[in-house]
Image (cartoon, rainbow, N blue to C red; front, side, top):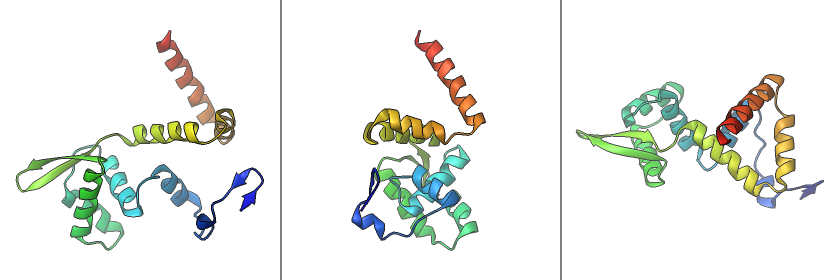
Length: 149
């Protein structure tokens, strides 16, 4: 399907659209399944090493989920190299390989590299910013360019 300059893959048209916060979370967590994204967000929120029990307790407040499901999801994330783990007694203690912010920065870099015209990608990105976000971006650019001199 062609919509102006945007081309949609036929397989993607069948998915129902996702709006609001869920869409933002899904986009941030690209590359993760829904449960993997939920687990990673809980881990990032804690900002410390966690056990499967910690994440199970957090997730089970919001949804009905089995401990073994959380266990296998965290094991999968470890095998995919999103989590590091270390044995602590009979259990593993997990921590993310990168922070949420590092992951977001990598997604931004990927968008710049694969999104077509980099100038257009940046222009669309900046046009969506609030005045506060724009000011924050300018401050970061000044700070980073000062380090590069």
